[in-house]
Length: 269
Ligand SMILES: Nc1ncnc2c1ncn2[C@@H]1O[C@H](COP(=O)(O)OP(=O)(O)OP(=O)(O)O)[C@@H](O)[C@H]1O
Ligand SMILES: [Mg+2]
Image (cartoon, rainbow, N blue to C red; front, side):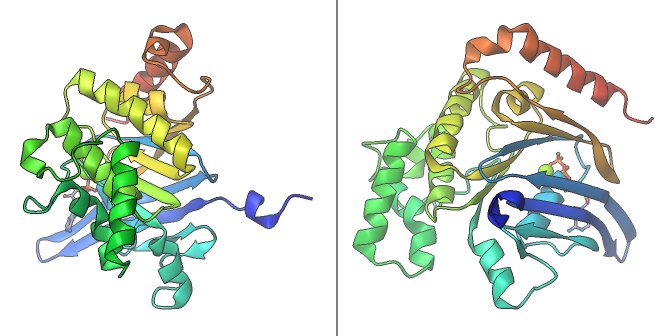
């Protein structure tokens, strides 16, 4: 018999929906979304602008209350048990990174990375040791004392990723983290992210507008419909790991990209 923890998904987005109410009227952003991820799985999410991807991430992360459904992380409900200890447990173990790196300009790189640990009250020597380890993990050795303005866009995104990993999250939520980068830097960051995911074993949910990036990184690609969104299609990616940039030229990769592109072309008018 397998242990219960192996059967239970690490992330379960269960029938979640969101309607925003304001003085100007109501906006149904998400009709209904179900997603499930096993521990260590990498889920890519694609969808048109405004379909509710950021809202979905915020509901998973405990930042935006859903109007229907719930999320559980490691079996702990994020919303049903809001306010009790188990809800705290669910969101304690996750980390966010966004399209803009959101670094504090007046903090050094290591202080930016160590910030979540400072907020948790970790002692200074321990958090700086961890920040240095993470600098090495994301390939930024030697930049520990630099200021964010001395770094390139790609390097700043690495800092943002390192900061997200500082708390050893079991779930990492990435909202178009590489959207602002040029194609070559983005390929490089995708390789780095793949390596980091393997090293940490975290479960990852990545929002992206790039079909190639979704396929390159994902074990599964979830395609959302236009607003009010639902899951339009799910594609399993069976390409071997570690994936290489050259794999993007293979028929398997290109067939998947084509299938996803045709899903998107098939949205209801
Ligand atoms: N706080 C809010 N109040 C009212 N409406 C909102 C709020 N946040 C988002 N919305 C609306 O919900 C819908 C989904 O927004 P969201 O930011 O989640 O989309 P998205 O898929 O992340 O878009 P993009 O790809 O452009 O980042 C949009 O129509 C947006 O206007
Ligand atoms: Mg968004």
